[in-house]
Image 1 (tube, rainbow, N blue to C red):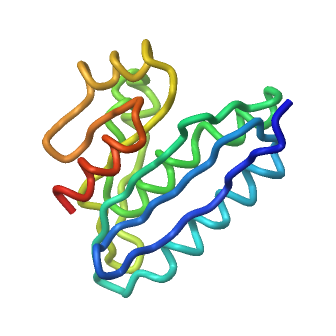
Image 2: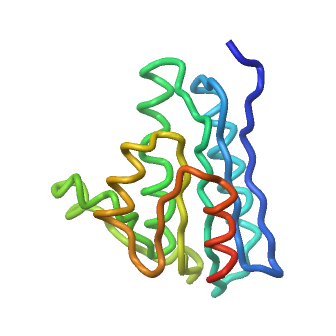
Image 3: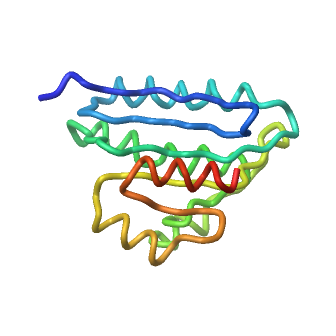
Length: 151
């Protein structure tokens, strides 16, 4: 078991970019810490502002079902608060139909990139759910380069 866990989020105001990362073998407490870092970074954006986001899950492994269940809705529900509907929600028609998009403090998400090591899942997401403003990668460097190129 690896002790190498990352649960952090940074806001780059000059680039209007949020970079959030959770990786390693994580328990629910780690996911809670990561979620708080994401919310803390979003709280730094000025009212009426906008941002792009790099969701880096490369190396993420939930150690148990409790951690996975807590984790799985964080990105879609958080981004919905900023007017963004994550592309892969199309897999879950009922949930997608019930999702309410709002603009917390009139802040909008303009683009998103997602990175994870599961090639099969990411290739599916990229082929079915990508758009000019949302992409899916297995390589964190390529994901970051893409979001920076459009941010």
